[in-house]
Image: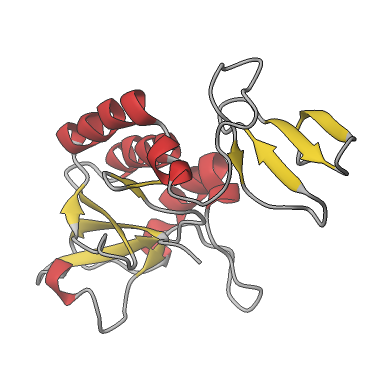
Length: 194
């Protein structure tokens, strides 16, 4: 459970999926692994939006295009998702669709305000990230956040699970983890997920 990120762009003109094939290809080359793809639909990284909601972003003579993100939202008060990926997406979208309007928001949890994701807003969020990273979100969880200090980042690691044992602690900065296997045995090292 969490607040998923939503990115939409509004471009002048009434476009079809065929009209944005080249932009879809270029965007997919950069971000295919960060976009949601259903097994029942074509694997499009940019999708023409024809649904009956988010009408406040629609405007006659314009087309709304969804970037089906595969990640959590990041913003003040919900410091969770891969913000820098979303910033890079917005930068490329501005090149692919000059003069577009980009919207970035969360799908729930009080983060639904559809704000424009222009360069000033991106800068504000980068400044926030530079000061806080994911720490406010991670500290909201229960657990012993200072039982182990990351030897690389010198910050208290969060307890984010048990992995069927006593406790699993990790550092978001570098991936270092401590896995308590028993009262006297633990595994430590980098958490490599691939």
